[in-house]
Length: 350
Ligand code: CP3
Image 1: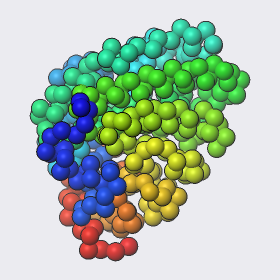
Image 2 (image 1 turned 30 degrees about the vertical axis):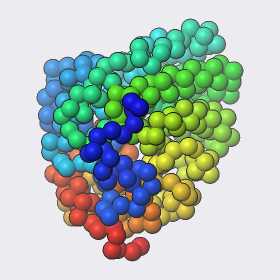
Image 3 (image 1 turned 90 degrees about the vertical axis):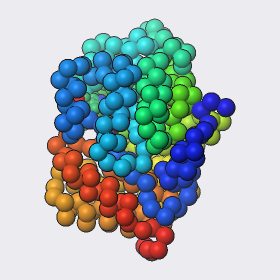
Image 4 (image 1 turned 90 degrees about the horizontal axis):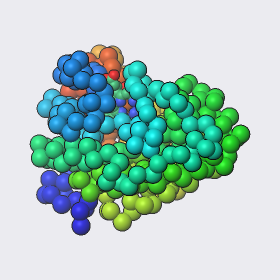
């Protein structure tokens, strides 16, 4: 079946083994935002093309995806795109400055009713094409991704990124029916979009619920978890491991622990062994503080070793607790990848 793991490389991947829950002899490593502004070769391309042009041109998106793989022996590639990609085809134009800006935010029931729900194959065909091109250029598994409904709704309603999403959070309470209608459409689009990425060859998928942590438990139980669950459930028959990310969300772990995702990506706020106890049965991904990568080699190695030791109690995919920051020296990434590859998990104990 298309979308299943088919190549030998993917079948023997330490990344996919860990994502399926195996306690691998070494931890696989990839980094959120491993392609991006900290790499001079990315900035060179960005000088000539807008962000959307890069996403929507499969050859450029594939090139940016493999740029970090040429420098570092990473265990997975994340396809170059954005969590905003499905919004324009739904009828919500998005600009980047450099974060997403939505000049006509979704606010009323009529705004929601007007939103289109395009079928998966019409949504963003350039993403599937880019995944196919990356698979031709590299044997490492490609991670497909999308934003979770609650997080994408936050941008669509607030109109831009925000520290507290006050407009969005009050809107959820003022307009609960419109909110459910919006989340329902986003869940349908997101599931179809991820299935399309799997059909194109993505070996794993990550659902970014980057802003889940700003909500309290009841709001998340009403507007977040059920829609994330629906997206993840709709991918169950693909057999592809599902990674769920939430930031600043340890208060939500009792709910997140029950989501149908094999892997939970956790931030740096608490050590992996503490998060592991709250997320039984899950492979963990994370969780080095991205600001550590702005320091020197010795600090990176010491903090990286601590994360590796904290992760020994079960399946662990090494990553940062959130994305690579723009000022990160590429050399620090090189040192970190080597450290993770050389750190033996099988013979060490916590
Ligand atoms: O290497 C990768 O991780 C793959 C590409 C990727 C991008 N965005 C490219 C990008 C991924 C996985 C994303 C996901 C994304 N986009 C998230 C979820 C992850 C997270 O950070 O929580 C969110 C919230 C967005 C929305 C978004 N897009 C923001 C907040 C920004 C602003 C600046 C930034 O880099 O954080 C963007 C723009 C964006 N998306 C850039 C890149 C490389 C920067 C564009 C530039 O070069 O100016």
